[in-house]
Image (tube, rainbow, N blue to C red; front, top):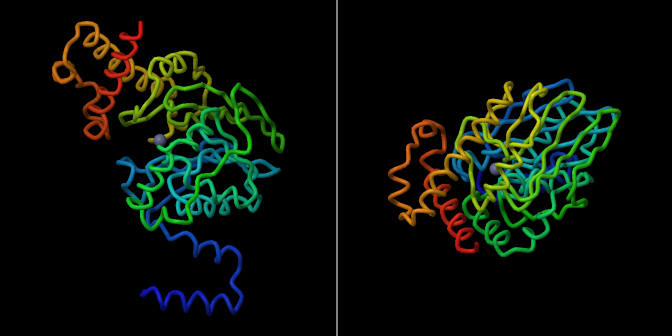
Length: 322
Ligand SMILES: [Zn+2]
């Protein structure tokens, strides 16, 4: 529809009394990508992003979850655009009329936070790991948003804003809402400058964020892989009914999902650590490595070489610093 006509239509519907939901919908252009709900516990749900790079599928590449309690809804992560956040909000409405009272954010990376404003505007409290404020003040955050306004146009646009958290978590903590018990574990800098997980005690469901990637190669970005590995080793997954990763399908065998991310990280660190120690060139070490355990995984082509290079550089810097 031509823009002018659309505006006239909006104006007319406005005059005949547009309800609040419809008014907000106009602010969030439809992503056009399907999003469906999966229940993973008595109170716990999630939506699964598609495998792909950050700007595929209108940016729907990460997961988000939510937990319905008798006193309101707790959301986990905000997806990669306000449009996707709004789409998730509508799916929650299919389950309950209760408001979203809290959003727990696993980490401040673009694919998990650009939908937060939908929930903030509803009055939800935004809870984020320490490290989020530093990210928000960084030029990287501003540049990323500018880039996504271009690469995810029209879903990320001039109205898209970075949401400052209302509460910062820097130590593991618990809370109860409507009789449902939650535990938030703060992991420190691992996948990002600060990561946390949300555990729904009643359902034995863990929302892990990007600490665990299921069925695809992890995105290392500027991760602290040494600390990330430590965090994975400390994680208790034996009694989980389900683990919802930051990307990929829910894991009903959480130990296997954990093992997959862990073996990927430790292999990269082993290969690149040896290269640094022997003062080998990165390209030679990369070519010589045996990637066969991982190369069939989605995102391998897009992510693996970059991941390996990041680990090489960080281990080289660490060895020089010693
Ligand atoms: Zn992510």
